[in-house]
Image (cartoon, rainbow, N blue to C red):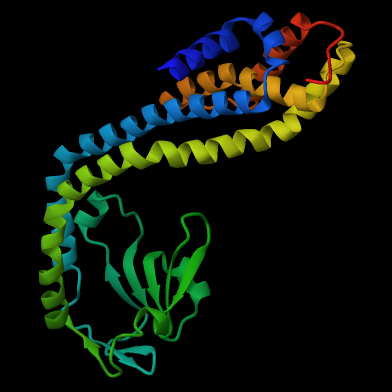
Length: 294
């Protein structure tokens, strides 16, 4: 409890009292580092609950999503298509390129490609863009989007390494396989609850680690600019002390950036602008002669 009180006092003063930064000059660097880490941790806890609540808000929509997903999975495989695996390569009994079309329920689920699957056993991975499908199957690879403007290639030899040579996939086998897998979709709401709990427990620690590392790396460069400003303002601060003061000065830009993120907003360079302006105010409050032994 005493540590939380210390944090609260430090938080208020770091945010509202530029004169307080004189005291930070005599504090240990570890004190400032722990302050920033705890600030980011508390913000991350709030973020974790937002994630968890967002997952819970999805629950009412899941039954409809699951039913549509089941229809897509059950009806998507063509009646006449037979795919055979031989020596790590696939062969088909249809004229190629062959397309498994996108079901209407698939489009309702947000799938926007023209085709669900394109099969061209004589094609290459580079043909992926041309076919405009979610997946392109060549004789040796499965090709999918990388989420941007390119694609990723997965060798079928690796994907199907446990499948016996000469194995076939047809409508009957596909239906048997999916009938065993589809019941797991009904458990999705339960999985979502577990994920929400995991988010609340583990997300703050992971988020704090990455956020603290990112801010410290950012200050390596920002503190250098601020050091130049101290020289112009004729304050004899060391780089180390400028960096330490900045750990506290980050409070305001972090809070403003977090508040904007709640509304999905981002303003380029705002974070740095706030930090520099705030630090200029702080530097003005510092004495001209500073004991560099601290």
